[in-house]
Amino acid sequence: MSIVSKLVVCRVPLVSSAWAFAAVTLFSPAVQAQTTAIIGVRAQGMAGPFTAVADDSSATFWNPAGLAGGSFATGLLEYNKPRRDFDQTATGFSAAYPALGITYYRLPISQIRVEPSTAEEPADREDLDDLRLFAATVGQSIGQHFVVGSTVKLLHAGDTTADLDIGAMATFGRARIGATLRNLTEPTFTSGGLALALARHGRVGAALTSGQRGVVGSATVSADFDLTTEHPVTGDERFIAVGGEVWVPHNTIGVRGGFRRNMVGAEETMLSGGVSVAIRTKVFVDFYTTTGDRTRHGLGLALRVTF
Image (tube, rainbow, N blue to C red; front, side, top):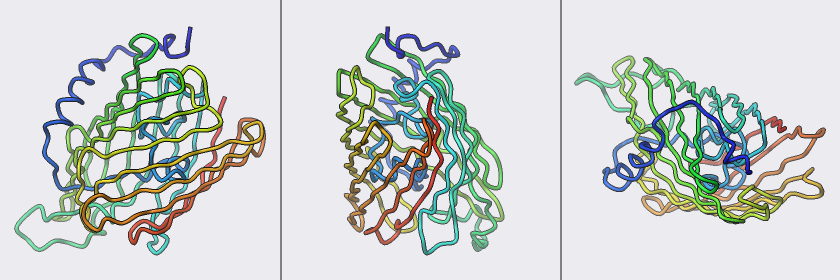
């Protein structure tokens, strides 16, 4: 029996959430907000096509249904600088095993579109705190090939609100198909006369891997497609991302790379690359860097543990 079929989790209405995912993604209009998709050094090194991969604890963000297909337990401690010319960073940690994941991140909000919450002139953007994310993730298997998952979030930026992400993952041999819907309630924060909103964001992805029975192996290629358009201060964004990852020898060194293309607005292309090195058994240092996009030329570093 696979680890997916052995998955035991809290009883939450995840199956109904899958129907909500389909309905909301297909019929909701785009609204003004900005992605917070700067979590996960491996994902960034591949340029972002991680929805159908999501096999470490960053799955709590990228696809909550991915927890069931990874190692028995994983943990990440992460430092991310999404723009080298800005003195702002994303830091945090995540930990997970197939039935449960927990996450804490402190994220910059400089790229999130901020609107006046009153008729007054907008206050300085610095009046808003960084966005702080606290989250718990659970999943539920449906047979041996399909998993649904959800991440319950507490978000703080000036004030505090709750939100929900949902995801699904299907595995068939070497193929993986994933889908996520983030910011289901479209949370809004207010502070100092400013309002910050996170838009509902849908994404689908597919991956082929050398691993057996849907488990990510030593060689993987993947692609992601945004289903919704986002509207940050730098212009409209709707991405297609393609990337890959190879591990040699004996999974002690990993090399990854990819590109991401904005299909609307400025229609820019971002190139990304990364490397992982095992510093001892099951303990890795991950690094990535990006270039080519005028707003996202960053780097990041993580310490990752797997069991």
